[in-house]
Length: 183
Image 1 (cartoon, one colour):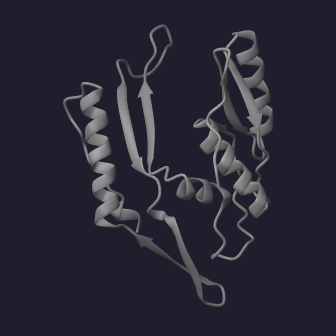
Image 2: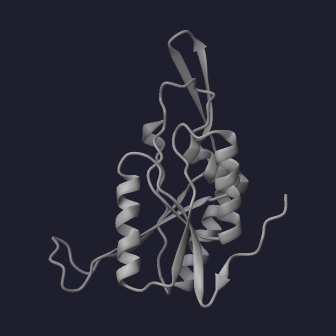
């Protein structure tokens, strides 16, 4: 399957927009308005994916994201009424695009009143293994077992990514945190 190059015409960029479910479509409407009023040189390619998306819808979304190389995604609800073997639409996007690093930058902003001051933390979280493995089965009727798979290869990959990100950002310290107490 051939993926066309990213659209970049007249200094404008095309971004895949996935409104999703719930509040997602309303949020994306406001993003469009904000970008329009701020004259942001972005055109949105809207792809409809929801918790009920078909395999074809998912393939179209994946192709659009690969083509445009950037996406803005609203909430896609997980349908908990489906069997445990069913992969959520969020999980399909994460695994097919190998979005292994969930990076969150928490920083206080000058002029905004906050309880804590001078906060500047980068959180890097592995996004494809552990609870995200989606290896679940119903061992007996009404009992679901979830396997938490963590591999050395992917653990090293996320650690190397975190150290590289810290180094590039001029950080002096990296702290590793685990969640062994919940499993």
